[in-house]
Image (cartoon, rainbow, N blue to C red; front, side, top):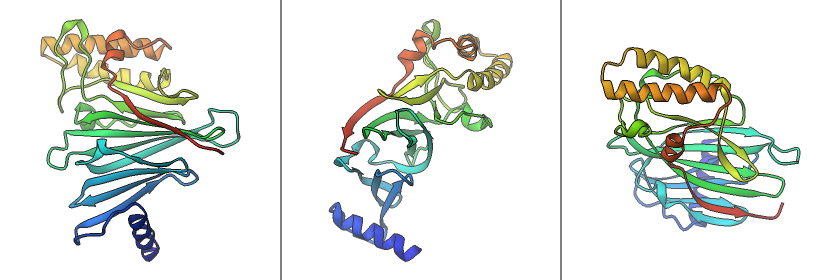
Length: 246
C-alpha cells in the first residue's frame, strides 16, 4: 500500500511539473472517494509551497493556501440536484505552522448531475470554541464554519482570539453553490454554550457582545435568519467555479 501511494504521488508530481527535490519535500494528494477531484500539494518541511486542484475541467492553482500547513479535513455529502449521486461539501483546514492561531479554510463544493465545482476560502483562527470542543450533532450535508472574529454588535470592537466565543455558521450546498443555512437543531446546542459563557463573563463589552450572540443563536434555533452584523462578518470568498461534461 505504501509503495502504491508513493508511486501515485510520484506520477502526479511528474504530471504537474513538481520536482521531488530535497528529502524534506513531499507530494500530498487529497481526495474524497467517488469524486473526480484531487488537491495536490507540494510540501517542504510541512508547509505548502505549491497547490493545484485537478478536476475533469483541468488544473486550478490554489495560491491562497501556500505558506500554510495542512491541519485536517471534513466532508459531507447530500443529494442536492436531481440525480441519484450525492453531492459534495468538503472543507480542508490549513494553519500557520509558526502561529496556529491563524490560517485558512479551503472549501470545495461539487454537484454531480451537471458537474460543477466551486472553490472558496475563509479565514480561521483559534477561538474559545477550540478550548470547549463541544460535541455537536450536525445533520448530513451541513458543515460548520467557526469565524475567527465576533461580529461588531452595537458598534462594539470585533473581539477575536483564543479567549473569545465567536460566531458559528452552518454551511450547506444548493444548486448555486455553498450558502449559509439555518439549522435550528445545531443552534439549539450552540445556544446553551453561549448562555453559559455569557453568564460567567465579567467584561462589560464582551458580556454585551455575548448577549447579542445569544439573541442571534436563539433566533436561528427557532428557524430565523442571521442578523445583519452576522452576515457582514461572514468572510467567505469564492475564488473559482468550473464545470465539465458528465
